[in-house]
Amino acid sequence: MRFIDSHCHVHFNAYKEDMDEVIQRTLEQGTFMITVGTQRDTSRAGLEVAQRYQGMWASVGLHPNHTVEQTFWDNDELPPEQQMTLQIKTRCESFDMEYYRKLVQHPKCVALGETGLDYYRIPEGVDRQIVIQMQEQTVRAHFDLATEANLPVIIHYRDAYVQQAKLIGEYLAAGKLTRRGVIHCFTGTIQEAQSFLEQGFFISFSGILTFSKELQKVAKALPLQKLLVETDSPYLTPVPDRGVRNEPWRVKYVAQKLADLHGISLEQVAGQTFENTKQVFGLEI
Ligand SMILES: [Zn+2]
Ligand SMILES: [Zn+2]
Picture (cartoon, rainbow, N blue to C red):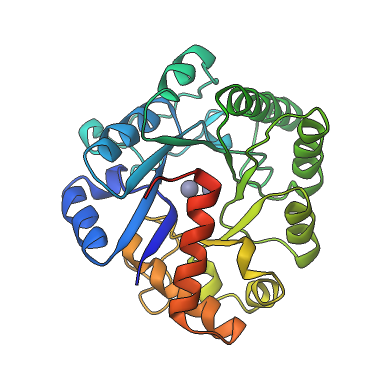
């Protein structure tokens, strides 16, 4: 059986001691992976790691939470060679089109993102409207480059369904974003999911599916032909391993839950989600 973890961050600082071991044990279990960039540095680093492994690809992008100065630093996030101390504050970044335009030329780059509108994690004490504008500008830049480079996008949205769907709709109406992409770590409603499917996007479920009854209802109602599975490692560890650092091979637990919900075998879910992921990202396997 083969799986693809369609969204992980296995090149982040959380794996600084054992990244290569984690990647190897994931590949040994027949699980391929797409490791996702969230800033300049992690975008470049992801490509460098992916280059060293068959069965591994990367995306490049600027996560919406990095477009604003944060009062905390997620120390798990930086690539292993860039250990930072907790004293260092986040710089906020803006999307450097020329920098990312170079990165997308890399043969292992299969998508732009993660990008999107996240109205949930806007810190206190900042002007919400300015942050929201900044996020929108950043998403537009990703969409423009995805269109230019003919790549799909990985969308991360939270508490911003209406605005996110509208922005995608605007690009599609203009004949852009022809490769579409995936709504990652989906946690919305059935109606939201269906509207993204109508726009030609795929929906990806993370380990949240293994413990959220609400989300299980949503996943059950959606066609398997449009679904992907992911871990979002090092975050969102699925049942039965909650509480430990996540690793990409655990994507099988997400697939098993999907199989239970749809009343089919794990083999069928593995096969279908593998094909779906190949299709979205144009993977040559
Ligand atoms: Zn995300
Ligand atoms: Zn992520």
